[in-house]
Image 1 (cartoon, rainbow, N blue to C red):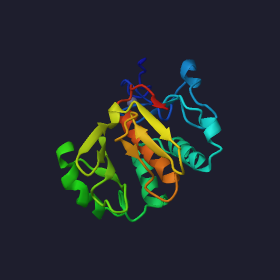
Image 2: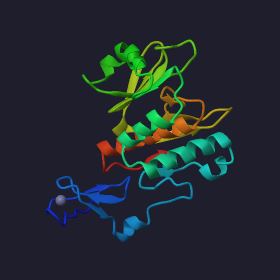
Image 3: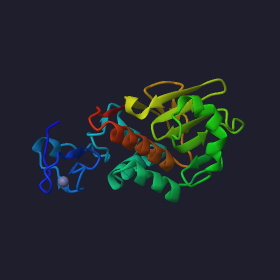
Image 4: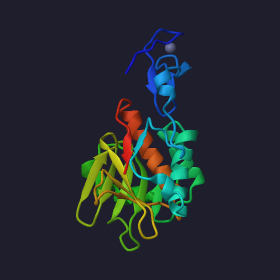
Length: 226
Ligand SMILES: [Zn+2]
């Protein structure tokens, strides 16, 4: 990536792709992105920036399905309005409907403690859980997924596997039957479902994960939506 210097203090600027801005890590100055090549980024009509996503699925036709539209609009809304994972996390906590068997920072947080024994071997000491979603009515603490600062954990009755945010290559959107689910890296054991009664919450969770991934690896390739 090209290098730019801060006009105030001379430090090298960081490019923040999710905001299309150059930011000085030392003095905090911000500069708009005036590079012609990158001005062309945005958009596919759905509001999903092609700096973040390569869309390989025909989302435009799927938008006729109410639940898909709800999911995609929420994802685009979060990424347009919030530039950091912290802001999306706040939005999830304050504005989203989180069911009793789910938890996000500040809502039902006691559930995080229940799953700690299951995820301990896969996480670093002190690694914060941000989202927990129980995947079955009778499977409290047995089948769930959890999003931490560093990774997504998928637990079934027997095991717990994890995918680092920086290792996410694709989100497979499954809109079959009457739900929307996302499979990370096309893996059948890495399924993300909505933590609420609507697909707005799932859109916010995917926005959160996307931003975490780009925050931890600013030069990463866009994530494919397949
Ligand atoms: Zn500066």
